[in-house]
Amino acid sequence: MNKILIVIEREFLTRIRKKSFILLTVLMPLLIVGIIFVPIILSTLDSTEQQNVAVVDVTGKYAPLLQDTGAIHFETVPAMTAEMQTEDSPYTSVIQITDDLNQDSTAATIYSHKEVSPALSKYFNSVVSAQIRADRKAEYNMPNMDEIVAHCTVDYEVRTIKWTKDGDEKLSNSTIAGFVGMLFTFLIYMFVMSYGGMVMQGVMEEKTNRIMELMVSSVKPFQMMMGKIIGIALVGLFQFLLWGALIAIVLAVAGSFIHMGGSEAIPMAEAMSGGVPVPDSPGAEILQVVQGMNFTEIVCMFILYFIGGYLLFASIFAAVGASINEQADSSQFMTPIVIIMIFSLYAGIFSIENPDGPLALWCSYIPFTSPIVMMVRLPFGVPAWQLALSLALLYATALGVVWLSAKIYRVGILMYGKKPSFKEMMRWVRFK
Image 1 (cartoon, rainbow, N blue to C red):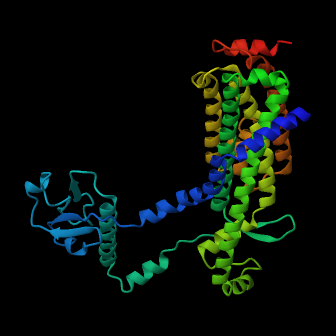
Image 2 (image 1 turned 180 degrees about the vertical axis):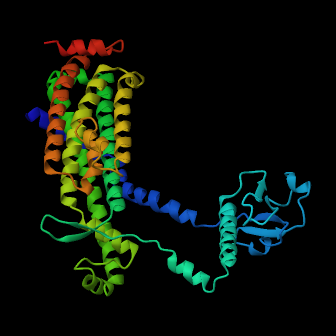
Image 3 (image 1 turned 90 degrees about the vertical axis):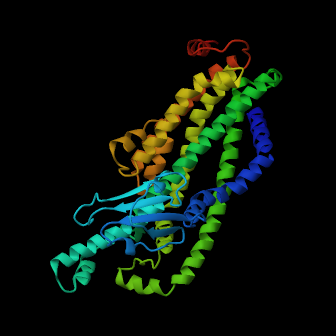
């Protein structure tokens, strides 16, 4: 046992002292925020290149409606010329309208040498749609038609409340719950793949450098394999806890700003909704829904499923790393594992809409897919007996795979030469 602890300590301290680990731990939360918000910010910026668009409107009805925007300049012309169809044309696009669009919706066409700008299509469609609606309202010749239509246009969204075990009421939102589930799903997928691959890479390097031969003289192969697996697992958990602390700080800061901005609206809302605060902004609603989730259960289950899933796959990675001599030889053994992981990820994504459906239910029991799929279901609520059964199957399978991998590991680490086949590796299991 002492030797396993020595290997664990070596693996843990060696990896957390690396600059790459420190940088990744600090920068990853910022990177995640950047991936989410930077594309949104950039999408709102207008292009600096202006488009010159010629408008050929036979009806004379729609051209005056097309007003210049920051990136698009419209110019009405009497007819389409041959020059407009060449690449030397001063116009990037030509809009041709040949008939009343209220009567013939196919009478408008946009011509361009390149793909038509989405901004141009979106703007033109919105202007024309508004005019067609106005024309059709006028056909009824009813006073106050606009007010009637505006009053009849309803975009209703029902509020959803969930009861806690204590009978309290908490605001809920299936979209936010699905997002939280997918966040934990991607985390566990990323951790298992990256740290499992780290185990295989470490074993391969030690075997290639012949360090393994020296280590085997003082440490048993099983002790070495388990020490490496557990040590790297602790690195992953330590990094996850640091990320969790950083995210908690960000949420606390964001929550203080949101509550300062809407502190007066909440008491009135509580009086009108049976004690459940009505958020006065989308940000406040998201924060309230997130705070209403049982994050203690979700985080505890995440740790348990990470440990079980990591133990299952890392032991396979260790056996593969001990059996091969070069990185190129790993593809034969890694392909089935990668396929299973990708299938699990897709099963989790498609389970968001129906977290209690057959796909989500059965994949949350199968040990090779349950660590990923169960993370999607947890924010929606999972019965305790299903969690217990899923964890029991996962850990029982993981222990069996660890035993099997240890048999392969003890022979493979000292085998050099040709790449072994699956049949040969199974024969190693029977060695005594």
